Image (cartoon, rainbow, N blue to C red; front, side, top):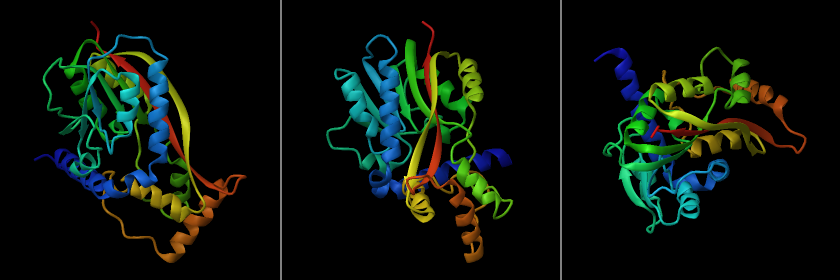
Length: 266
């Protein structure tokens, strides 16, 4: 097996393990996920289009998107897909049909969906592969509604770690241009897009990092696993992050939100 393929397989295993471990604590720390799901729903409402009959919630997590989808299209058949079995197990009993699967290799037939909704899942995927799969399963004229993360996500943490060492501690995400190029290569038209900043906040850095860990978004980028920071390095990190403290006394963590409406041409 080529080194790149093995690294990708290891990355996927780490993603699944991280979100499986986070499933039980996810909802308690997922205020940011709920806010972004609400923003994606508002983005959908701003775009006119046909009512879908069959929708995939791709990377459903514990089901935050299910409530939004039920409000948007109450008569539609919903399929909730996630890579992590423990996340699917947290879905309410009355939720949509559940499917454990990979967004990069969807276990669905060609042209079998009218719409795909994916909120904060595709950033863990290779864009060209995942969008190619979405294009495959959409019917002609079908749409994908996507909320993902851009490269300025957690920039405060990246800057603070730069004061500690030269290692890569913070995951890098693809810019908007890369998503648009990947969509075009997959045969999808971008009919609408938007971007904004969303902020997580905590009283101190330990709580901020704990919340990131509790939603699974830690140690899942490629590269070696690092030892915990020593006491002196931790104090340097805290001091560097203090520069970002807000007037209300909280420490922020920025999330660079990208919203996309992609359509498979009829």
